[in-house]
Length: 203
Image 1: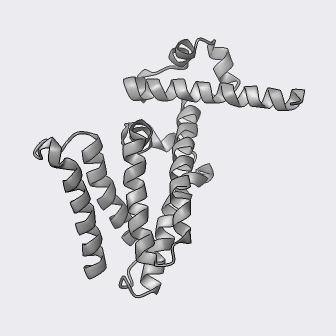
Image 2: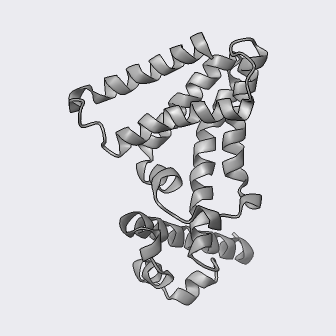
């Protein structure tokens, strides 16, 4: 490995170390209560080192969102091999739930943690747009195939996403106390299947 390649690898390792420290503190203490100095103390480097990689903690938050969406989109991409559009939509829902359950802290940071979302640079947030765009394209396929009636694609995709996201968030945030713990997973599975059946019959 040459000097340039080694330096680039070391730079990327430092960037990931900073992101790991920021993610840990954001989730533990909340975005507003965390400073660059706190993150520097967490990773045992000076604040000046962090500023070499990120101009402020808003940029850190943006990078963490990118990290999460890149990982989630990676879970979705194999679904493009499926030919039946409704099966593709159902499997995308399963992949979303699986991603949330397997990456609860990352999911929390992406979708649940209170943070100043207006600081995210929407023009550069390719990953977030790509994830929602993928859902809209599958919904459009379902409409083109006559599985769904013609509706506004964006509104339909939002309704489907919010439905699946809602009970996924309830599950992760332990808001299902009314259901015995031993039954929660089966209730989640049944709820998802019922949601999909309802979509197919009535959308």
